[in-house]
Length: 375
Image (cartoon, rainbow, N blue to C red; front, top):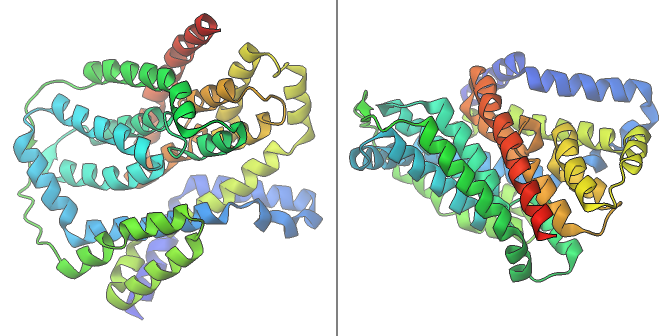
């Protein structure tokens, strides 16, 4: 009962201060009031496998954090990396490479808690590090069909091979990463890392085992479209072995994602959006590129890719556009929203856009020049 009460208090506190959740809930309520008959179709708008995968990853990463393993790894890194710029480059490169192999949100679930553990022991620009990790996973994930949901959708729709898709996206990935490295070198100084805490948290073997051993099987089951079974197994394991971890999970983030699917897909289905897109001429590659970027800023890049695929068979240009559109406003990529939520600081939203919006402007122009030359 104590754990239930603790979880209830945490959820109530999170909901009370979660303005994004309130905005999304208000938008859904407004849509429901304008057309009550459509409410029964709202569950079908939600990508439940994604929500289930998110819930499972939240539990596993919270378990890793509670086990003390991330603190131990942070202690190891702090002892061997002497300055802030090198630390930033290591974390950002790790985020980019990991997002090429697994999805960009999984990469963030692995690295953001580690970054927070490092920051707890050393004087580091925590917010800026997490912001750049969010940029890195969006840059790295554009290379691979499995790096993000829009690539998976467009790869399946294109009919090309995995290597063919990677070859088509490699120049974009290279441009994004090269630009990100240059910006990173300017954003972080080579000043020595100042240790501010001892990082002496003991490791809890049982919690670590519960979190680490099911991690890969969970990802495999999810990838094989068995997210419900995977989440059920994780929930049972932690209910029996580490219920306190379940009480500390940010369940309001799951609600935010459910509401986002509903709101964004309702918005994408609006006739005025379809009419506006048709008038902009998405059949032309140059037009498709800028429409994809702009629409990603409005409804996120996954719904944008699904919507624009109805107007053009040019999957390469569309893939480039929606991946570039993942930068800029936080809603452009769900991975960015996850990073900001895991960071849990209001000022992070300002810091994110201070870096991400100029990055979008720069990379959009650079990539457009490349596309114009390559065509």
